[in-house]
Image 1 (cartoon, rainbow, N blue to C red):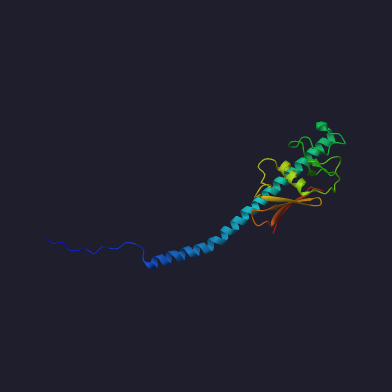
Image 2 (cartoon, rainbow, N blue to C red):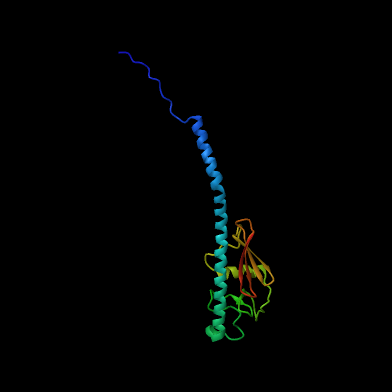
Length: 180
């Protein structure tokens, strides 16, 4: 019995199959990439919104503690020392202005409602209002950078181009989140 050679069948992809797969991947990438980019921007904006909400809550808590201390004389607060080192909030180092809104940690006397703030005071406020788990505001690549403009602290978000910010108005206690 003689053996006849059976031709071997080559396995693999043909050129047409490869071109079709590449075309399909290209179409999927063209559709998915814009959605992915939008998702990244949305994630950054969610971060800024949530931190803005946390700052709003912290400012309100300080104001509430100040009012409680002032109105009832709780925690040893008397008329001349209610504004400095508000007792009952955090480590007791927050100072408030005449309207009861936080203005820093190293004030003295009775800060006026229109007392201007510095970038250092804004950084100190951030650290003492937000306390644990706050995004970084110092170091080599902080999530936020603090600056001051009169009675306003501006916290610029650095991780997405530096065009989103949280603004705190110490005269009114309002916190605004802005996106550009």
